[in-house]
Amino acid sequence: MKKGVIFIISIMLTGNLMAQETTADTVRYANVVIKKDARVDVLGEKMLAYNIGLSKNIRSGKGYRLMVLSTNDRNLAMQLRSKLLQQYPEHKVYMIYQNPFIKLKMGNFVEKEEAENFKKQLLKQKIMPGNIYVLPENIELKPEIEEVE
Image 1 (cartoon, rainbow, N blue to C red):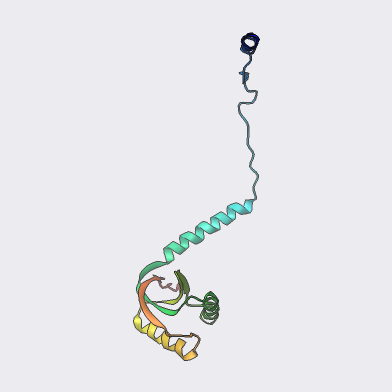
Image 2: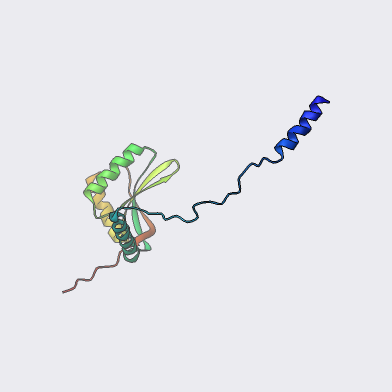
């Protein structure tokens, strides 16, 4: 009985308590000042110009690439890739991972004869540990730049 009376009195006393106040906020609007380096805008403009330039100058088409290596030895693939990039900077080297092999492909040749001639040149130098294959693929075609006189 005492517990019941204490319970009823405690409910009556706590009835006026509220969990949150309903007072109005004193700050309704605030100004935010963002300070940034002006070089960020310049970098963004340069990146935009570069990306737009790439999309205009490079298009894809049918052609040929050389498969120079297919291995599961990553170190060998990286060494061969660095050699090829140093000796032939004008040709792109593509490193593709297809589980469990790492494949190195090289070049963007429009004609099969170009790819065959370059293949013979690479075989003479004996840089590759195995055979080189000419593969038909979609390649990057760059339009020829017209010289202005």
